Image (cartoon, rainbow, N blue to C red; front, side):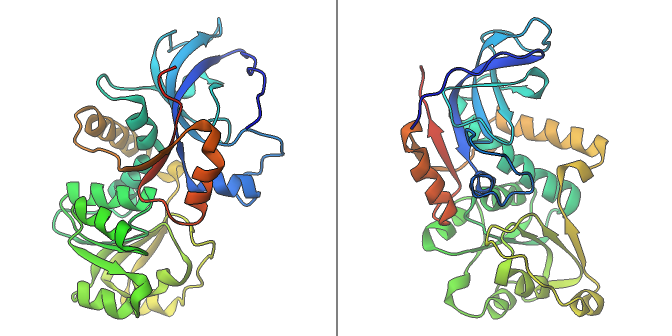
Length: 307
């Protein structure tokens, strides 16, 4: 770990003492130069943090010294402090600690906007979740169950499936153990209403085939590293829809509704993020390797403690 000088406070920004930072798969991609947005090195990685405001620029509004906040960015979070635009900071509800706040942001926002405004999951529907043991996947499992769906979790290890089961998944499928299409047909014999896929690769097509007529397939990302090639005749024959998720595509009124509902879930402890491992700042490389190798169950955090 290299010591760097404190970043300067720019107009409109605030300095935050970082208490915890979440490790996300896009962090791995940014470091590898494979993300949609490239960042020229050198840079401090990390995209999601929670901490306490220590300093505020004279022209910055909306935050004060001592506020507990969360924030996101492309880079910069895996550090003792970060300087970000003040209007990009979000207050942490009272009673929510920094670790839980850091683990909640990106994954749970992605999951909630996906199933509320894209997959539009309804009570009683059958929902298949690929990558159900990862950060976004496990959040989709939790939120799908909360919304009243019957969730089938697809993952790559017993530990990940156990985590999904502990959060309410009714059907568990280990895709390493054989024919995924056959396993999903057995788990959801009448077909699923919706599939959420943050993985891609070889899992996407059999999951798409598992939809009932008129079903919705939402592609969220490609954690497998492979963008699938889908035979479009499946879409024609089954009358299903394939929809991509991006935050900017959510209608403004729905976005505000979703954000308010999600904040309420966090504030009332109705939704607790699954934190499987924490690492000190000095072990950030190890935490990133855990995520890169697909070993993370739920969220992995960098814990800087109460400094």
